[in-house]
Length: 166
Image (cartoon, rainbow, N blue to C red; front, side, top):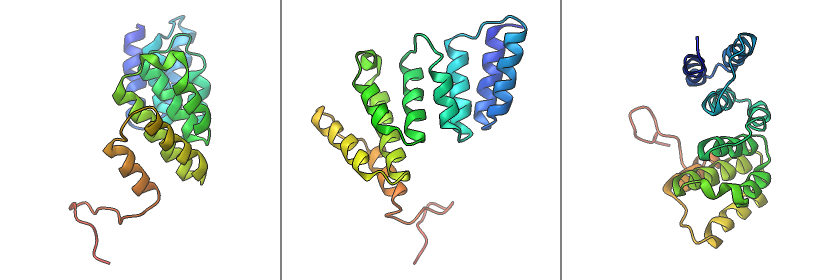
């Protein structure tokens, strides 16, 4: 048994939104003396996020000593998921966030706006959107879609791809 096997199993638990299974695997790793690596911890954060546990995801993220861009993005998603989008925005402004690609930055912005709107914090959502513009970026299509979907401005698409007739 090795760290790669457990990382794969934790990633599989994330894919089916089973954070309890992922945490159990981490506990088993620790019991066997197997040290989790960055990918293992990032997969564990993802498992908590997919299970709707952003606060737990952020607690785990904080245990990562040297996050890469993807791990940092997961940390920002976790913060945004439990109403701390402003803190996620500050994280995005930090010198550590220079490692994020443009695509990762847009995904972070999307998570922050979506989290703010879902919690009713329209001021923070506006601040994040203004931050995008002030930083010289153009909001991605995904950001606009997240705004529309979160605010339910347009009817949801049906499985056939067409909006229902109202």
